[in-house]
Image (cartoon, rainbow, N blue to C red; front, top):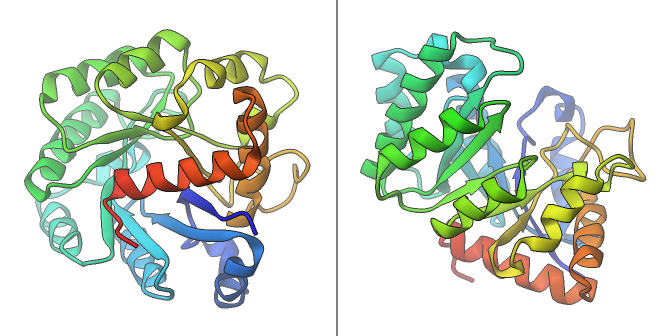
Length: 257
């Protein structure tokens, strides 16, 4: 059976409350070899970490999403720093900037993003970045941060030029179910240009269910549909693509077999 690494999903989300345990038990038989459960505020970071401890092949990434940036406090910083010491934590995130909804003021988003990059450096953790309608500021903060212990741009929706800058910095690019959408020709063109050795796949579940599961709650095993489209864009066999992206994720998150 083809095995996939879902590099970004929110199994801690309340939409999984009724069947989380059952779904986790089923996922290996559905083709999931490993997954990173993503936090986005202090409470959800705790839930993500608790979820990651429910199976040996689950891991966690903790941080504060830009939507929650205005709630940042010194105590939150101390608490998240402590939580990140857990052996299950393999990355810091998701962090970044979101100018689409502007749920936190932009200046606060930028300040909290920069501070969390510094925390990740102190923790020696790679970062998972959310970037929506904020390309220039996101890239500038990344440039200003200097040496970072690895980075991935999650749910990538940017241009070929943006992808190239990130790749030149040694980053990974992660693609979600959005590449399966009917109107995603431009994004699939980006997939064609990104080296498979620098590519990850994700669900971002329960959001962004791929074709043919649009309208349903997204879940980790649906990553296979994103992977199949990405493999086709690269002209690759699906099993080969899954194996390479599995190893990419293990390398990025420093996961040993």
